[in-house]
Image (cartoon, rainbow, N blue to C red; front, top):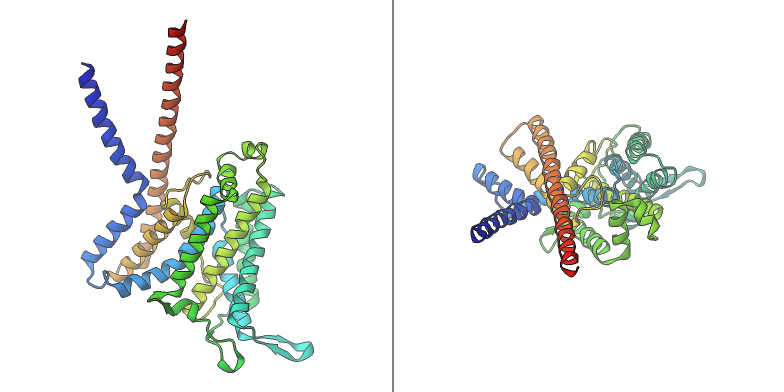
Length: 365
């Protein structure tokens, strides 16, 4: 009888392991399925050129997603990243077109690297305002960042009078050329935008997995009160993650503007939802405390490759929105299944340990 039971348990354990593997690696498997399906539907899809083009689109979502992951890990949310992307894009565009100081009759054309640094500082500032509101003034993250979504979008429209900065390629005589290099050019046959994403991902991965700051972020998301009691500077951590999110949004704005060689105040509308989708598809919990950079990147690739695949096979843009929305809801459902299963198994383990302890006590007496 017991032998039969053991077999049944082993079979069950085997099937659970397969389910667990599928759940843990769902973003990766989804990406493979998307690539196979679209390669069958379109002859153009499966080519190095197309993959590189799609990856440079993903670079923007990926950067936003990484910033969003940091915020979500602490149990927050940042709805302002799309607007921050637009604001930083037009700010970079404005600097590249030249800054005139009328009082001194001067025109100042900063080089591309100066523009990049100043734009990242602006993104960091927007993030810092979000962070201060959430961490120190205890404004709910949803409300604070929703407000900032409007403020940043309004500021972008004010800076440009609602117009778009075209022709950001610069002029060699003024020394402000090379902006489109960030979006278009290739190093080692890989678009620069993708390399920027890769570098940001590596830095953030190391920060999360190898530093005390990373551990603080996870513990803040897991249980902020307990983290505070054990000496984690919870407010500083919260402030930091919003700043990181702002800087990532600024980088995304720079990459997007340089890919289009134009910067418009309406860029990045609804991109905050795409960023949240990338994080959720990557298996992070919206409650905080769970998620990795690697899976978030996979989530961004799933969204990018799905959207571009639908374009290539000629599906209407309206259907793309329906597909993306469905994918998000499905991903959250899977997350809930995965985490409730984990929760149950940990409870089960605790119970078993308790029974064993009782048994050993009884035998001792």
